[in-house]
Image 1 (cartoon, rainbow, N blue to C red):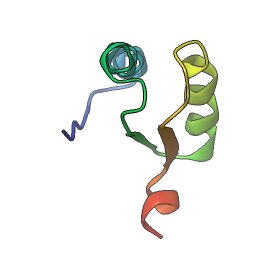
Image 2: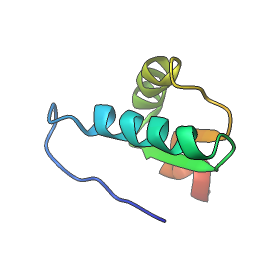
Image 3: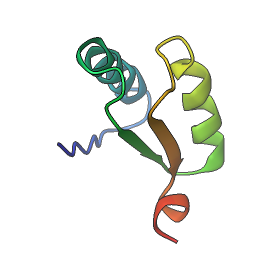
Length: 68
């Protein structure tokens, strides 16, 4: 399933994504997850926040990383 979250800054998108990843990991620890972010600064920040949930199978990157 593909989900695209769009909303203004500081409205909880990152937390929502982390909660969805955590819920998915509860049911399927190895399900593939791709998180596409606008730039490497956002990738690093998301990675730090995701560290408590578990990173196995979670791919973080920018549009360029995934599609270039």
